[in-house]
Image (cartoon, rainbow, N blue to C red; front, side, top):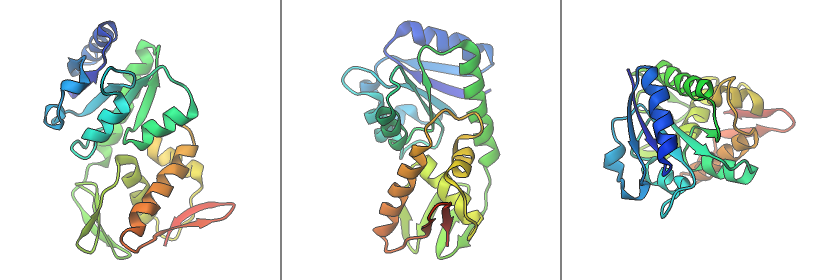
Length: 220
């Protein structure tokens, strides 16, 4: 049994989500006013479903507020299909999104896939890779005494490339590692994530990800 939090200002949507996920034997909490929640209120959950279009504080802003405090998958619920909106949402720290209206089987399958992936990724090892310290349990990266503050997907990309140091990966291969074969995000999000990683690394005078033009990326 996993603990799941659903946040949406539509009470009918919340009732539907609760019914579907309780049927799957999950413990489901629902909230319809994100602006009243603090980072402490969303602690202890295994997955968060977060609506994008909400009053006072939208899903993007709320995700950015809590992302550094929670280490669980965050899935956006959105009726918006524009590429820019989706990329912005994923860059704010979300792991995936579901487009409304969604089906019962789709919600159940996507939630289960993210929970399985999250469980597989748990380990307790630390490793030095090319001047960086990876804490695979805490999902953190350090440069000397300074921590790189990465979103969940940025960390996934860094770990994947670093574990396979000097091997070149295409954008599509990185996408599959981050989202899995059932991902519905856009390939262009990978380019944006890598741009963000490089910007954060540059602040520490390091640049581990190189571009192999016409092929992809590698950690050197």
